[in-house]
Length: 229
Image (tube, rainbow, N blue to C red; front, top):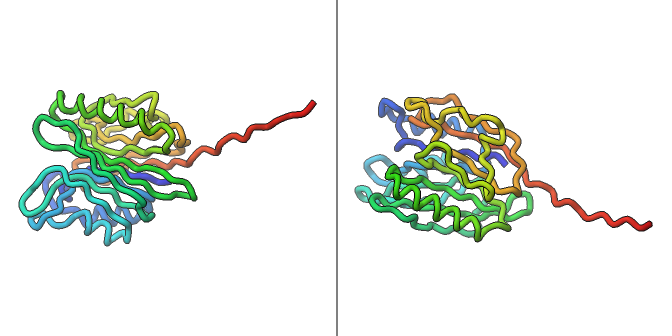
């Protein structure tokens, strides 16, 4: 499974130049199974960005609106190589701007897995409430293989022991995902069902954030061996 999390910054780079086409090219070259996107516009002013990317990659799409904007919305999205069996869009606690969690279930190698995409608040109190909400939600999903992707707007975020920090597992936790501020705000977390094989912070500069890439595989269940003496 190759998962990518990418805050696309409204399809623009640090200097506010349009880069959505370059983002699509990069994602196509990386050949992900799923992509979690944040700061996505679906309106006439900035374009229907999630649909543009999904059409370029020929992937399935679900968009989770967070904030009404113009004649559309701004929010998160999931692109998936595989058909989505079920989708939930869950409002997160927030004092100011509304934030959401997107949850989608699909089949991968004959097994049901869940991809979660979110973007936490800048406001510290709201963000703390959102992280607590996610922690409680994870406790109710212990038996499901989960990949949680997003921009958490904070350093040193942890959901241990419920989830592994993929960067930490691979010894890449010092790599910045928001280079201008030398911070790691973007994460991919994985439940214990996953064996993390690789974590990479891409070098492309199409957004103010770097896309992060994780390769993982589901662990095989150990069969019980009974010996007769």
